Structure formats: C-alpha cells, structure tokens
Length: 212
Ligand SMILES: [Mg+2]
Image (tube, rainbow, N blue to C red; front, top):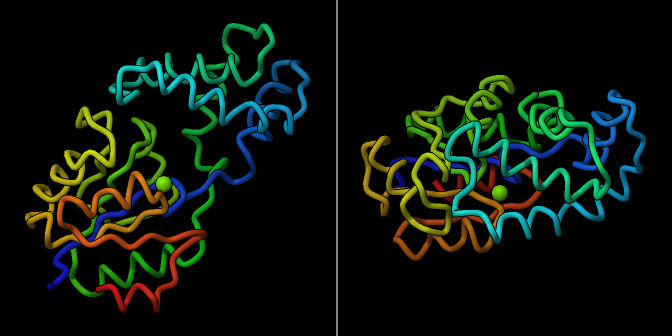
C-alpha cells in the first residue's frame, strides 16, 4: 500500500501546552488579582474538562461563541471559586496565543520530510476554532487544510473528519497515514482503512521514514 498523503493530530502530536494548564490559568488569574495554586488547578482540570465534555452536544466548539461557552464552564469548574466575569474568557484567549504552546520535538523536521517527499499534509483535530491561527503562529505546515471536529460536526474516532480531510487532499482514506497520540481518537481511525502511527512526546523523523 502506497501512502499518498499524511494527516496529523494536533495536541499531543504536533504541539503541547508549554507549561501546564494550571500554570497558565494561574498566571492569567494573577493578572486579574486572583491568587490560586497552579497545582490545585491542574488537579481539578481533567475532571472539569471531562464532565463538561460529557454534557456538551458533541463536538464542542462549532464556532467561537460555542467554544467560549464550553471553556467558560471548564474554567469555572477548574477554579471552583467565584471568578471575575472576564477571567474565563481570558483563559480561553491565552490558549489561542502561541506563547502558551510549544512545538514537540522532531515535528518541524517531520513536516519538512513529508513535504520533501511531495506528499500533501493536513491536520485532523478535535481541538477548536483556535487551532488554524495557532498553527500559523507557530510556523507549522504546509497543510492543505486544517480540519477540526467542530467544523465537521463529528469528533475522532468518528471517521467523518478524516474523510473530509481526504477529500481536500484528493486521496482515498486508504491512501492516508494518520499520525496521532491518542489510542482511542487517533488509533480508532484505523477502522476506516487508513494506516495509523501512534506517537508520544514528539516525532522521530527516522521512524517516520519507515512509515511512508
Ligand atoms: Mg492528541
């Protein structure tokens, strides 16, 4: 089977939060005169995110307003204290800023390697409307398209986002190599016939060559 195009997950595969969610939220809060311990925020964040996601019409973030409404609830549950009205929005905006993200090791080399092979690339992510601008700001690409679950109305491992990307890339899903870090969200895409490579902590360009 020949790989004709590559799709990438975003968070955990191409990029990661530069510090932690807790340190970023605590920094944003401090600027508004609210003092909290980052470690307490980090301890509560996973549960706050999971519980909000569980009650949200899937997938969250169809547009900026929906993404803000979703994150307003995640942020309030994470802080678990009364907050100034504009603090949740400031936390949301922080993670639209490249300064709070980092590019994972090997990613720039890997993207260049795929491009040098002449293979078109796309991003297929369950993140939201902040993603396209973030990738531009971090200087990542070239991507034919950036597909988010909200834009398609279905989240990985549902195959719809991947199929949308394949159409934009001009290939069949079976011609794709999808690279991601989540065994469920990314690994589950193998069921629709693409090849999947699960990675952690960055991309080894030499290992990537063996998958192309
Ligand atoms: Mg991921």
